[in-house]
Image (cartoon, rainbow, N blue to C red; front, top):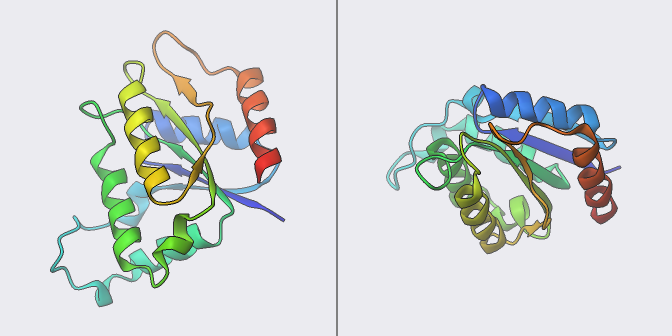
Length: 162
């Protein structure tokens, strides 16, 4: 059976979004917030043998068949916590390609604005890592409320890919 990992970068509006998406998805899924992992800032000389939290996060990602990332747009791009987690995963996993390669993903955002710059830049990053990104996004902001029906339609098509 397929398992989807719903990743919220923050514990605010995007965790609320992650939970609403979780209520709409029919596949087995797990919701995590990157804030719960307390990853240190990635620096090349950081001793990785002491970072069991990175290993735990890597195992969660590897055991998943697909992802739904819920993150706000920060300064026209990805939030630092998400970039940091992706960096740790890509440089420390024994098989970092196994974390992302050929897995499917949806990008979702609850942002103050449209979130378009985050959606675009993060799509490029995921595709670079080998992830197949579903072309439709889930967007919530001041002008666009969460729509159960729209999200269910997106998830139904996404689930066919998994």
